Length: 260
Image (cartoon, rainbow, N blue to C red; front, side):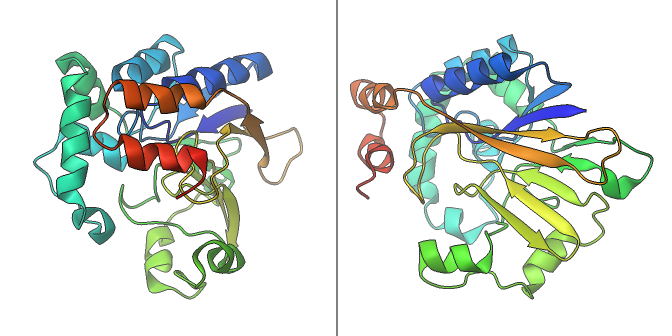
C-alpha cells in the first residue's frame, strides 16, 4: 500500500501544481491526500480547488477551510481568535474569488481518512489536519525542535493536551499538517508525522513544496515514510500576492522571502 500525503497549500497554485506534478511522477499511489488548509492566505484560492479536484485528490478539511465556509463561527483556538478580525479580512477576500459551489465543496470535505493494511487497528495510517480530535490545536514537534525554533518548550511530553489529542486513538501512525514545520514526533507508541507545509514556511522559511510518501510493504510491522521536497518558483506567488492586492500580501511575502 502506497499513500501520498501533503497539506497546507493555502491558496498557492504554484506550490499546489508543483507538488501534484511531483506526486504524479512518483506514482502510482493507492491514494493521494491533501490534509486541509487548501485556500486561505494565497493568491488564487479558486485555482487551488480546481487543481485538487482535477487531480482526484482526496481533500480533508482544515481549520482555515472552515473559516471560509463558516465565517460566522469564531475559532476555538485562542491563537486564531485573537487575530480573528485580520483573518476575516483574508477570508472575505478569498470568498469573493471563489464560486458558491467551490465553497460548498470545501464544506463537504471529510475530517479524516484512515488506511488499514492489516486487521490490526494499531497498524492503520490515520490522516487528519491538526490532530485526531479537532481542526484547532497543535501537535508540536519534539521538544528539541521546539527549543530550536521557538526558544522554549511549548508542549512537553507529559502535556495533558497532547495526551487528550491522542486518547483512544487506535492508529499508531498519524499524518497531519497545520503546524508549518515538517517533523516526526515519537510519543509513547505513536509516530506523529507532520507533512506540512506545502506553502507558507512560517517557521523555518524553507520555501519548498513538499509531500510525504507512506508505504506498507509485504512483511512490514509499521509504515515507512519518505519526505520529498519539491522545487518551484515561489517568487511567482510573491508577485501574484502583490499584483492581486491581497490584504495580507506584505506579511505573507515575508514568509517566502525569509525575512520575518
